[in-house]
Image (cartoon, rainbow, N blue to C red; front, side, top):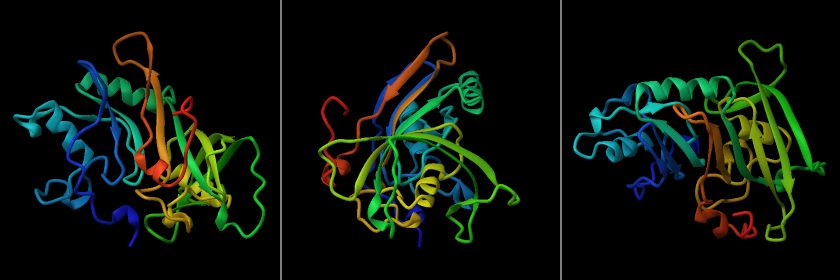
Amino acid sequence: MSRETSGEDASITHLVVIDEDEHCLVVNKPVGILTHPGGPRARDADRPLTLEDLVRRHLRPDDPASAYVGTVHRLDKLVSGVMIWAKNARAARRLARHFETRQARKEYWAALDLSVSRTAINLSKEWIWDDTLARGAVPWRVEVVPSDIAGCQRAVTRGRVEEYAGLPIGLAFARLWPETGRTHQLRAQSAARGMPILGDVDYGSTTAFPAGIALHARRLTLPHPTRKTFESWVAPLPDAWRSAGIVLPETVI
């Protein structure tokens, strides 16, 4: 079974709020929880708790079902980091447009597992990954495929390796800036180059990670839906990174 569909983390019961105003709610998503309900169990009272459920409880503790919750982007269950939610329809429309027109700038932090490759990896200081992605033979996986495959989508990611002394042998620490927002984009692109994200067993990592995978949505920058300003929010790293021996300088964290 894919870890993406494995059991929920029952310890996640509260929302970590980074910022909030009358139009937006910005939170730090923990690992182990889906962004929102989906599929045939979306209205099932016994379905697993989602981040959207926690957002509803935060906005309307007395009546969560009546809360307006605008979902404008998502993070995988195994991924942590900053997310923004709209609190009214106007904000939802404008935020969604910012994501659709690529005005939303996202920075991810990733620990790349270099130990799985049978050949030496030539990891340059900076790069641009420009691929086409499509669903693979395994339902929950996305693959890098030739551009003439039916249904494929272009995926572009800028990246940079940062060299720090506090990294275990066999890992590389990277900053990733996706310019497109495809499903499993960063996971599939890194795996295709022989360096899957640490702990991402679905994409070939053979090294354990304490919780989820070592992919964190570190920063989100976009135009505010009502003010004529760009806003930027940062999500602190989960404790799992330090537990895995990934110690970054205090000036970075």
